[in-house]
Image 1: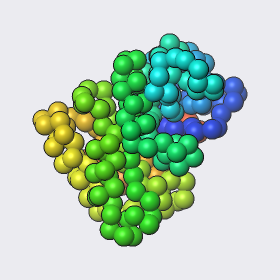
Image 2: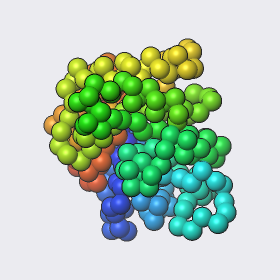
Image 3: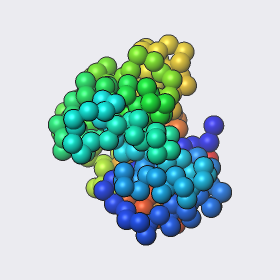
Image 4: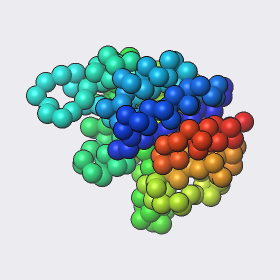
Length: 239
């Protein structure tokens, strides 16, 4: 199974930047997914022509209703999106989302037929206190849906996101091994089939090393996903 390369554009991208997604789509690179801002999802679906999967960066837990400014999973699917990211630490931090909120969004995404990338990760203070495994266990326990189908986990240590700091390869391996153990404990044999991504300051320079770590099934990329040149260099590093 080829490594999955997922780009999260966050609050970046205007109409002119669709050219970057078109270039990614035309490259022939395998297993590249992009989550542009909601304003670009429909145009990204068109220019990607199926060569690059397009998804949303978040969704509301409800299908519809009086939720001004929010976007439902059904709306994303209606635009042609095929996946959604939920539980990103920036959503947890900036919007006060807890594990129960994240779990409701996972359920909403799956109900709309979307694959769901569920993000978990510890802060610097939690890692320094030796609480990484406890934090990951708690986040998984509170956020995982009842079924494993269509689920992807992204381990993103909060302190590594956008900072240029990256855990050691041994630390990444340990975290992914712990997550795998919790998934198998929750889902049985199906837990072995859930892909676990690493995210947090992934660049073309470190991608090959990170993708070579046991149980790293791909990467969730932030700033380095904004240009085709950078993201395709990461994709080229995949084994």
